[in-house]
Length: 48
Image 1 (cartoon, helix red, strand yellow):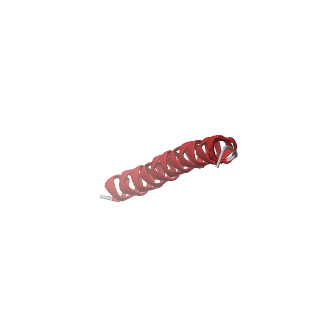
Image 2 (cartoon, rainbow, N blue to C red):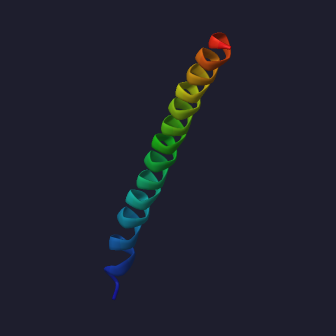
């Protein structure tokens, strides 16, 4: 049982890194989507 904390620490670290990467990736995707939508809306507005 004494080995359990050894295994928990790296796993928690990996989970934190994965969560951080997912957050950054999601934020990037949303930002890109908003930019794409904004460009599309601007083009539509210019046509009218």
